[in-house]
Length: 325
Image (cartoon, rainbow, N blue to C red):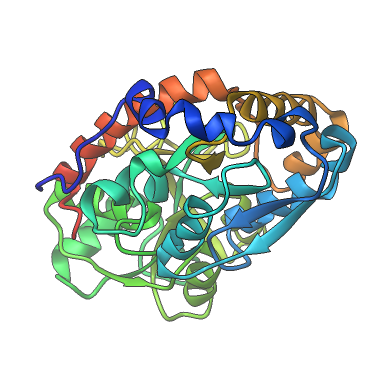
């Protein structure tokens, strides 16, 4: 894999923005926020992003002083929404609900309308692994049985995926790279549609967030195979990690808030502080718990450091998994 775009460190990216942009918005920064904030979700309804976004925006006004309006801008595997925010006025009133694929992986391997330096980190909300799942009436009930099936039936195992170079796509590419098996992925544009196709019998497996697959595991429609983490999930204590089952597939997924590059530092800090207060709220945590999710918050400074390291890590993952241009 040849990296298409030179990676910039956080300091270099901010330097490119220039002091002039910040100076051009003093009035906005001083009384921020004074109007509603658009919270852009770049994936279709029904997936983990839309579930989390709904919870975040429901009670946001108490902590921000203004409402956060959830806006869905799906298309292009997240690129449509990301581009819209990247091109928005950098005043803090248009935010992206981002993730590793649209912010860290795809800008490095695809020719998109935005770059890794088109955004500045505001806050990471949580960080979670994926769960490999299969249809309850399918021919396998463990990850080992799934790999065996794929070996015995090359190309016949069809799994639901989100988008090329998306989260599910990359996880399955890692599994295929580790095992050498031939599986066929079908991209449906997001976790919601992908799980719907699995439940409808169009595909045989999927890997995604517990907030999307948890209820279907509980009602017996889906069978959990393994989780892509270093340790078992609290919500699924009886489900082994993929590593425990002999498959070196570890890949977590964050959901975080991004603002357009050039957003004034004091606005980013104000937003970060508001998100920090919100995730500490008992009501918010209760709602997050209802979708079997958890909070793993990082403020704008910590998030920036983590993101810079992830950019390098994602380049390695893309090369290993054979991410496509």
